[in-house]
Image 1: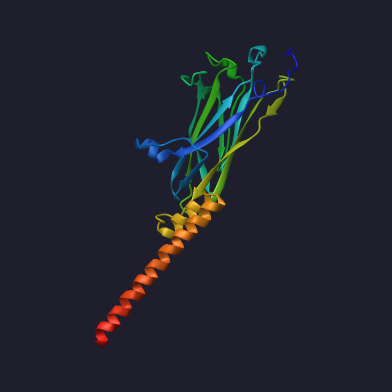
Image 2: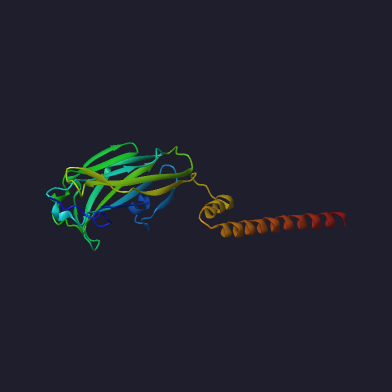
Length: 230
């Protein structure tokens, strides 16, 4: 019988969701996992959901574990891309344990569940379970900011026959128009990520540049007219 614990971040599993550019990773280009990513319609993105285990793991005879992931409707999850890895405390890969999980994908929803992760050789309370999967941004996706979420479900610390759920974590996918560029779109992107004082400074710089261009054009027209009159 499991001793009822004081619930905290060690006894209750958590999950961290991150995103990266799958196309850049596949091409060997520099990439990093982050909490947000700007993409174009038709792009492929990769998600990484890293789940922790309970510090009470050695008190269980079996331990159920599942991921519930939800993407926006503008994305379609690829079930064939799903992998689950057992990660050691130091971050090293222990084993690919995808075979222990049942994958259920439907459009933008994904469930990856195992009835007993204790079957994984080398698993311990300090291990982490790393789920990775890919999704395609629909070619006709509208520009805008979208959110994707994930949480984990696990055997309850109070009743091993019951299932509890973690807090969810999320990432932001910023879909931009294909090939969009220029001062206006660049300024808008910067403005979304700058404090109010930064917005004011940026607006001031753009305003000054615009005024300078107008002054230059007016000066050229004036000189041309004087030359014609002379």
